[in-house]
Image (tube, rainbow over all chains, first blue to last red; front, side, top):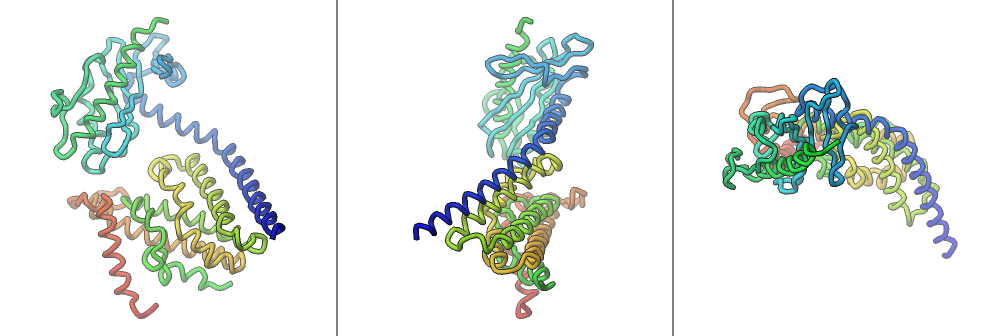
Length: 184
Length: 193
């Protein structure tokens, strides 16, 4: 009986050990490719909100309150800033946006990089038609949907998703305001 | 070692419509046909792999600890598929990412391990895994096609310019579509299997 238990434990341990080794091997093998793919995803988001640049904003970041403000430069001169904002207030979970700003503190673009809103209803927050309302306004402005007394359009049947976008944009903007004040 | 090991899983003993296993991913990811097929293929890879490994280890694994041993084997394979997909099929992984780890608890994988691989040879288990996996893919593809056509008015991303019925890409539509498809399956194959 005791021998049996030891045999069970040993068999399971050996299987677990082999599994761990195999997983560690595959993890090491795929890590560079996964990191690069994630970086490309992020750069696509940055490209969408920033004016044309020739540096790597994801590496050229200012750290404020442990969060990054990404700085876009062209020919050595700063052309724009970008920051990520999250809001837990989405209908299906967290909504994450990247907000880009020009050096004159106006928003150059907003993209939603992650969301789990309802397909066909709340997921209209990713459309350019909705997001363009943010463009050109000042980053110190507080955004809210019309239902909350703001000026951002909600959609019929979906107020919560646009509200989450406003919240996420406000978070990113707060960071951008600090980023633009940052002295090198 | 028999071709029936492979063909049984396709239609006669189809994972979705007959065994009714793995319904969680079948309902959750079948919003577009591409997602359905991709999820099916990922599951097929895990199923074939786990069947082979478990069949090879069946004389080593003591009966009393077989379930935890199977789960460790399955979880390892799923993690590997997850990592490889994230690295080399990144766009697809962004859509399916959430559901890939759940293949571990997909009843088909453990079901085939317990009812087939632990009693049969390696090659027969490989065929069984592939057959059941492709049958599962088939089930997902059909369900996803119905939901995509009705719910988005597209098929494989190509617009059919039909008005979308949004409920079909939402969870209730998944249950509705699956129910009707299962009724159709039973009607078609009643008495013959």
